[in-house]
Length: 259
Ligand code: IPD
Ligand code: CA
Ligand code: CA
Image (cartoon, rainbow, N blue to C red):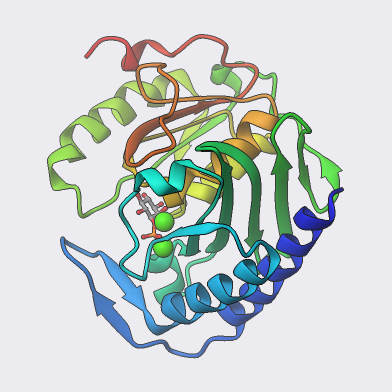
């Protein structure tokens, strides 16, 4: 493993400890229904920026909680850390685990390294482009089971009200094609679950770059196909729909092709 990846993993583990030991955080509302941020999100983001810029001083940052939430052309040059200090903030507020720390590193606008830390289960996912994905040092390979023999997960961000009917329509059509549906509350964790074979498909109608920058690399390095919902490549420049399929789901399932 490279020293840089090892160092990012250590930073993610410290950040995970801040999350896990935080007491009753003050909750702030962002725009839209049930779109929250807490003091702990801000504290972890500040911690990540301080520590990660120490590791790679030339890197720029795109983070959810500090106003740098617009992808700029500067971020597609050199190194750019894309961080979500707490993916699963509502889970965090309601103690409904998991929530994860997500750290993606882009190089020339393309996914280069990824680390995702789930402190509650002591699980660290990591990946480097072209070099595979790992969980606590063990190589990951997504499931080769067919969808009919697998769980599927989906995301329903409550603040994008205009996407709800379509989201639940896809979910309704997907349910008879799989064993059952799940909803975890963290997009990064959903993709880690597809990467490690707990489920075989994840979809969501809109997620942000900090939700997928790390997890999409972990999943694709574990053999998953990670595209937008129509099967086109991810932009790595901002919000997108997402469809993450394990090895056993080689075709895009019908519900996503019909609308
Ligand atoms: C959210 C979670 C959720 C997904 C939303 C994201 P946050 O991130 O990943 O699972 O459905 O689209 O915004 O707000 O908890 O960091
Ligand atoms: Ca997020
Ligand atoms: Ca977040």
